[in-house]
Amino acid sequence: MNPQPFIIIITGFLILLWAYASLSKVFNFYKFKQAMLTQVFPRWVGKIFSYLVPLVELVIIVLLVLPDTRLLGMYASLFLMGLFTLYVGGAVFQIYERHPCACGGLFARMGWYKHFKVNIVLTFIALAGVILMQL
Image (cartoon, rainbow, N blue to C red; front, side):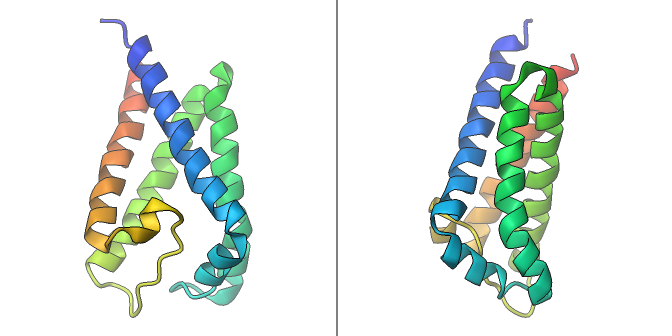
């Protein structure tokens, strides 16, 4: 079985995901930054993350687009989706005192449980991309 068509589909999907996620943050930067400042971590971390998260998402797009760095982009997608999933899982399992969401677009409208389920699926898609690229 040739995994290449699946790799292309997963790559395209992840590029669209990260483009949507990063651009929704960039185009609504003030709202995103305010949400980051109300997260469970210190405000200074929120200030840094408000710039770092969209930048990292845009860098992942570049990594996925370039054939020579695509595997690194898959690993980065898996890592970042894993972090996001753990963070949302913390809200679902009530680990935090408050539950602010700095998510953009459609993700901001989801409840925590649906968001958690979607993140799990997206994490497994990224994992499938990593595995297929290593076959």
